[in-house]
Image (cartoon, rainbow, N blue to C red; front, top):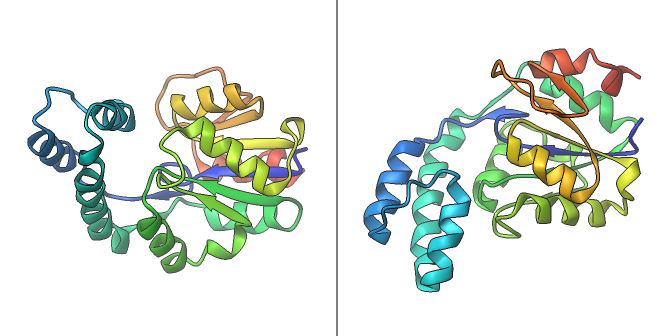
Length: 196
């Protein structure tokens, strides 16, 4: 059993209906790039490495779209049950590629901010492995004591790079090599990771 659990936010605990196709189109116009923003923040970092002055305008564009989506953010089924159960036994942290304003708005509107001892957003790092290491450090967690819960291959790769176990909540029909794979938060809620 883990003593510390770090959660990814969007796609794992919540759904946030950001209009990403529009964000990509606006960023392509803004930066005059042929990049597709897929993976999204990799391409953002590539552009910023060439022209650091584009970081501010790009982040403001993303922030605007996220702000529009925050009122429509929803908890995944059983996410509140999972957070309540785990917070009684372990310390929790949160990582997200959302901006700080959107993250704080979501945590407040969905009443889940109280569960997390720390949170790290894209303002802290646009690299998921770096965010995960920050979360572990903030908790005082050693890698064997920690578990990361996410939904993307990038989350899996970050967990491997940070040396922590990884539980994937994956609705897609593929089966990446996580330490455990669940098709929904509700399925994870009934697992030994939460119930044990």
